[in-house]
Length: 266
Image 1 (tube, rainbow, N blue to C red):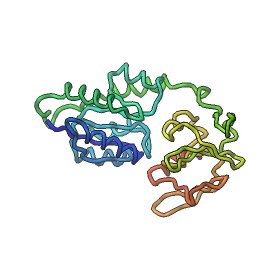
Image 2 (image 1 turned 120 degrees about the vertical axis):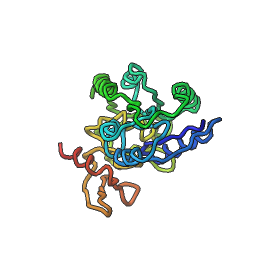
Image 3 (image 1 turned 135 degrees about the vertical axis):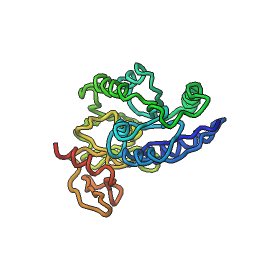
């Protein structure tokens, strides 16, 4: 039986990579669609009935758990997450499948094998109860909140290479991080930039979310580095960063605008 999948992931490159990996399986999965936000996922799930849902946790307009409050999800869920071992314990306790980013091909194959073992031989009736128990979801969310690391465990400095030397850059001296040509850079308040050995997804979990915000796929900025915010076309916002960003325009996507405003207005 050929399985169908729906991918919910707000990083287009990550979504395409996962779709490619699913297409290269010995028994390829058919991708019914992709969504970048809670709203898009809810809309697709009202029209589609995938065999499995690949679900990122942090989406453009909120946490993916909000999807289950708005629509009945009647298929197994495989979370794709960059969360560290603290939060992953919650998944293990609840026996929820997950894949740690960047997704490993062998782990994906193992998750799909487990999925096929769990699926019934015959299609479930239309009136079948949701495959994801809301009570289980509530327990999962609670355990994730309880097991998350305290703020003190977020990174307070980064070690970068300067020629043959290593330099420690305290968090207060970092304006923002940005990705360019498959590399990730740290931009200091003094206008210097250094390559760091982290992806943007990894940085998002390592930095205190009260201080840093993921403006878009390529920029993660400290609030003090945001010098101006300008209304832009299609309900988006343009940010002006200091020091000046390599890109002429650093935009906040429409889906993140409300979250961004809430982050600023604390």
